[in-house]
Image (cartoon, rainbow, N blue to C red):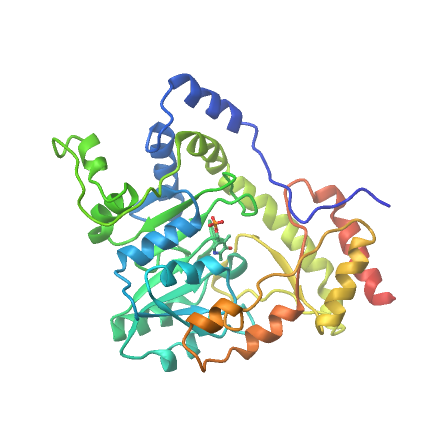
Length: 378
Ligand SMILES: *Cc1c(COP(=O)(O)O)cnc(C)c1O
């Protein structure tokens, strides 16, 4: 068998250990030290948000958003069914009720045309997900939210450096959440960030992140002692994580450029199979600049996908499917508002296959492409 090609391989810039050694030498390892401040500055510059706060994960940033948005028991939150569990869990932890919306058949993002019929007197928020680093059509979502007085939260876990109409994903709504999990484009092992887009939320976001205390104000000399002011938890990462992450953020644009070249190679090479009706490639709306987080194809049916996964595996190539729809999951069935159906999600989740995409794949990428092509010649 050929050398294995994993689905993902974390990329290191080479500067991470230097930064960690430096943080170690300085001897200040708790959160919000100089590397955390550095990451905040880099994230504000990269995304254009007013205030970025590092968190231990995107999940933690989503939980902060639910808390800051004041989600209370019984409040409904509209969420795409085709997403990771954290998008929904964050609200359920506050007693919120997920209301699942179907996704668009082209981008696989929440179908903005299906949101309004789901709004009731109990609806408090809309959480969108920028799937595969293709930013949702935010203009109609923001207009709808303004009309109904709803908070918009963007799960931008996959969307660092992805934009729509020149504006980065995660900066349209009241809050945006990023992930630096090792499967994302820019990584810290585990890590995330909350983008606080409304200055009115800045002070409370700092307090919630610091166990409900005004510790950040104390360290800036704005108050002479710090105390318990609000609900909160420990959402901030330590300095070693921030030291690692700052090396990655320094190279975020170069990492994205390299990923875009790998993505484009797949896209070009698989165009013929799309023309022959064998698969469907990702759709990019004209006003989007994606970040090559993922290359997926949609196959004819579940059986074809299972056979292709197996065919690739026989050559040592790991390709994987993605989300199991949340609306039909055991927990979703128990906690979500009943009677909402998501036929597009049910259909595409069975047919979607993600191909390996990581920096360093370049010399082996044609092997993946040839193997996919040979499957359809079989
Ligand atoms: C990766 C991911 C998350 C979770 O991110 P963590 O940093 O692991 O908590 C949440 N939502 C989406 C859409 C993701 O892709």
